[in-house]
Length: 351
Image (cartoon, rainbow, N blue to C red; front, top):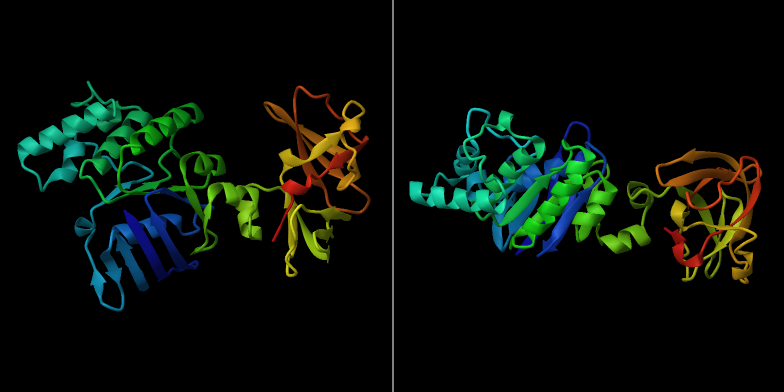
């Protein structure tokens, strides 16, 4: 199974520009609301028409502006799970699932719907209406309807956004188990970075209509290649930077020289490090730090208590604050105290 997209679409607030290839994987679209993720899904499904470009699924051309090919939604064999599930309120669970099976005879429709009712644990709910179902049950019905036609590609548009946290985690586990048996392409749209990391193999970061660079999720989080990627993946500590050595930069906003464990490109503009990667040096562990590279003195400005950690905002003279995070089982650091912190070379990244 493979997908090729190279499209442009002019919209009122931005121009959508997407270019990517995917094969046999769960591909994530990660970005802020209104960045073009859902519009890309609609273009793949045939619900929206790009201004130019082409979309090819499993060597079958769905759209080609030059050749004037634009298959209808029904011809594309696409499964689409909308944010609001789009269940018909006057139809039962069985009727909603069988709605996508109009090309099959009655016996076939009945067998397929029974199969997916069993697979998605909807037994006993066959005759209920959407308003009689919980949010998680509604989602399973919508997913059953999307999968019932054996689509070549499954488009999931923020499928957990309407669920509370506990139910979202449970449904995420259920979905990943279901997708293990699915043989087609999957695109998973979300603005939740943790969700994207857990569910997806590769991720495309969207920003103001631009979705071009597909990255392995581990590489994306460990070494963002742009300011947009760093911010979208939750990096809080980013400084303007200037290269001063083979693997050393001066961080203008932090006021310090930082050494990395890899050579640095000449044209870098920024350096970053994630809050949980910064190490606090204390009297108890100072003997572990024989290497004093990237060890700096900062003052604690203030702190924020999280459920399982503390976030500290620290600063040095006349420079921008940075954030560090420590577990709650460590001694709480006090406001205005001077502390030593270390930026491990392997956790710094430049772009």
